[in-house]
Length: 438
Image 1: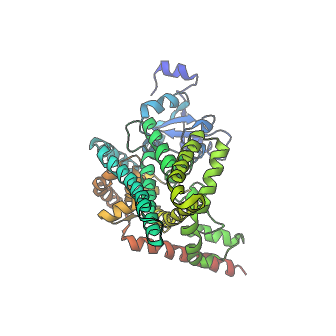
Image 2 (image 1 turned 120 degrees about the vertical axis):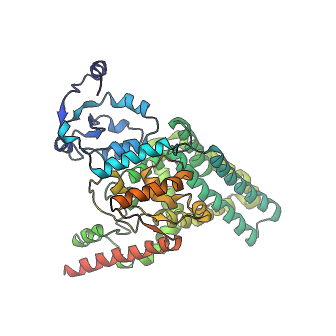
Image 3 (image 1 turned 60 degrees about the horizontal axis):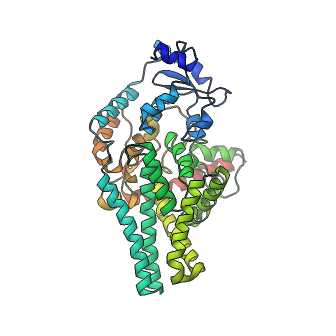
């Protein structure tokens, strides 16, 4: 509860109580948008456009309880509370504050994990990871400098650069989730350095997309990663709806085949380049633009004397082509085969588990996927440093077993295969529905 002094500073009658139904009425379909955090009710209508994490991610929880998402995403809660107190309009009525057993047990687990120090990063781990990225880039240039640009040397250099870029992608992911440094500002600085200076991409664009995905994974119209119906229909719900409405321009019953021609080879070289450029220009993210400029300046300065300007550009695009395959198979194996559905308003634990699966632990799997083979643990605790996922995994499995929630873990190649099998299943659902309508 807030003190009288704090209440006076907000200028709002914070002693008022509400029911969950009243809060729900102020959801996405309302002009005013309210949000519940720790049984307090906040009017976020005017705050949405100022939210540092993006307007959409907070709007996705309008009319709902966002306690666990708020806890999961913010590492400096004393800072965020200064903003929240000005948005407070009241509290849930006492008879509305009961939490279900799953939510209570998950919040107890989080406190246990915090007490174990599993949100503390091992800085030498991240320093070593960054170092091996820089070394790979340097070795690639030295190799071509000394051995020339023959096809064998060219391919070897491209593989080294691709590996460095893929690993830099996993590293920027860590900084973007605020899981390395102790403060948000330090993480944001390093995020821009790695995402912009090493990968020529926008950190702001990544935040805009990725936090929506984490907030509502595999939720239609809220997770941008599953919002691709003009190319692919995912899950069981979307294929039926698109078939009934006779929407779409592709034969989705063949999507498991044309997936290989569209998604892995083209996502990074074409779509992400276009979306990044449009985002940076429209949003005027000058720091991101500057970091990308630094990347290309260094790239062309190093390789133009060896390959010429056009040759350097072709090498860059070839590396992005190779990296795109790596990125797509790793990032999609945890989600595409899982439930893709409209909003279910499930508790945090359940909503993450139905949309996420793991891949078995091994040194190679951990390195190759940037520890995204622990996708379940990562989604439950997105600010946790990745090297601690294996430590929290037994506790998560135990909680899932207690509440009879399926915890899926697969081999790497089974997870890859499930992407294709899932696409085939969804495509067949679309085909059967479409043709049964006559």
